[in-house]
Image (cartoon, rainbow over all chains, first blue to last red; front, side, top):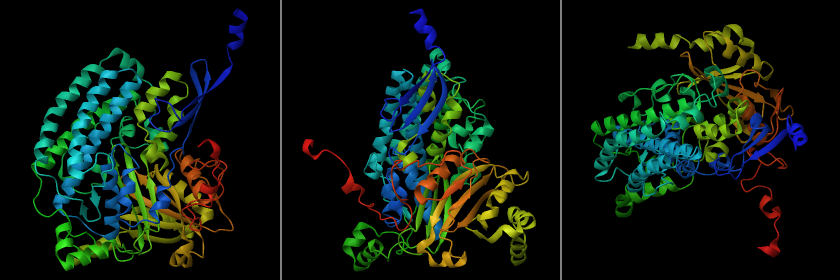
Length: 398
Length: 182
């Protein structure tokens, strides 16, 4: 026996982590080279959920593609819808109505809350904190009811349209959202008491998966993962889009760039999002939600069914070669999605379908930087680090 | 009001000014569209320009946002403008020091599908260049690990090229499974 142990030391073991593993949340795969329990080398592999979204973008028209954006980050589809139509509208040179901008901010921030809540629940579940998972899913469920009432779907929301949104907020939406936002900080406090000073949670996340600010920028990390390293960069502040310059909020930052700081940053971001939602509701302007431009936005259904002009406009927009046609040119538009910088680079040849759509997904960069955070750590840290990054396979592989 | 506008038009963005001074022979075209500065750069000097943009202390484009490519084979106007180069490799950069965004585009001819890798400047370029290679078949010289990333290793062809059909080249038909046991 003794001889066997001696032989075992210094021998490397290769462990295949994923693509089907309960802690990978999607089809991710990491090949770990281990010496005992220490990670010598980690090689992430992507592509298991590649769906050809960019190719599809060259074959669908500008409004049809909104449906595809739902599937990219399926935890915050409303943010994706928002980012995509913003890019198309900027390419068209359109500015949507004030009320529409506010509704979009409202939904984007609620979806940030939903995304962070799911992240919180699963990241804690991976490290054994089961009750946190239940608490965060309880809150997330309330948000999903609001999404369902607003958009008609819980996950495949497809809420935005070029030039507007699918429909105005439902009657009673404000009360529902206010009630949620009113209760939420208290509910989040429960989680704080469960995790923030919890000995096990701190031991498993503090100093784990740390990355320096320089490395984070070099690897292209964005969003909470970048801010956890101390870089106070938020696209909502740096390049305000929609009406983000009219709301006030703080950009929380960490110091160490480890899993614990990413946790704290996301927790504080949720509180800030609640603040934004309240401000948006307080100042929600009246007026139309959609642009009254029949070349861009669909007419009301009653108009399409009841009037010949409405029918013609409706028909024109869905007919290939008559609908939304941005001028020839290209545009890159970045928005702050819950995970970081979500960019759409659209090249238009002047026709009704894009010549090229490129999606710049935040998770792609976070997953790429994984070896930097894992190597030198323990194999059990892999789960903690992967959980803290919130890599979404749908947007990683597109 | 008019005077103000004139002054604004006269003052060039810093990045364009600096590129004109230091890399004027590399610039093929420049443009400012929808708030983003776009420069088209000669391929043999692309690395030098990108390195300059990153390391110049005033510009400090330290964040490589994206690397991708566009197959311009069905975009006649672009082809004509850049000597019938089929591909355009597109780099998006961002400066945390307030210079905003810049887009660097590099024409790549089909008979010489290679360009210098920028993995030495940005670690984040590694996967981006792999994806561009995977989707367009553009080789990045000096890349440490240039292999497919999204498509399977044994995949043939480059799906985002314009001549690659949307439904693939028979992958569905050739998909092997045991029909007896279905």
